[in-house]
Image (cartoon, rainbow, N blue to C red; front, side):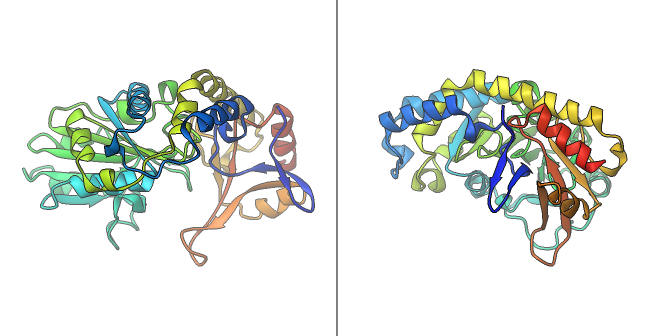
Length: 337
């Protein structure tokens, strides 16, 4: 399969973006999408409450729940809307605690532990809330795709001994590529009776769908279905869900291809210490910001930008895709070396 190309004044190999499984450029998937557009139209500006295409939405949501291991699922037109809808239905009298770098989809307040490391933030919670019986809501990303750090949540059980906890995780960069069948973080979260697990995710990254999803219990999904944000907003375009349901083998094949690319790249890196990465995740972060210009001189473009504003910290990363061939990766690591 030919590597990604940047069409500009020159041709370059591209190692950036979030199309991890290369779905948006897959010809078989595109054929399914065209078929869906012919059947369902290019958009759907109504409400889910109208009942239009109900069987299709239910089939796709049941499949997403099955993949993740959740009891139920509900799709929205974006990952951000999924997060805002969850916040809308929760009891605001509870204590909301946000992890560092939590995505704005979960309405993160200013100066709320944002400058701490995840490990230090976790220790603060264990010290401050372990002995209280007040119910709390913990909100966090499943991982940080910028500095490439995966978070672990088994410690939440220590907090949940005497209280009810709602655990809300944004898994936008993990759902679709990490876990069994790309099921992401949901099945890895603690399974205690007094912990309500909720996962939100964009579907526009690994899955290649312009929408988002909430993965949760049937009770939470029912509350969402009666919320104003669900009823008032237009849903994900049905043609994409039709293509999603027909593309199981494509996702499986491309997920395997992506993992092979990750292992191939790691195996041939002569200096692994200059990159921060973890198993099966296709992003490799480095503090060597000069690497961007070096690789660009070899007609290779990687991800490098200041986030979340032009004067903020710079992130330089290599992002692999299922679209890359071994030839592309060999060209990359030779240029690095």
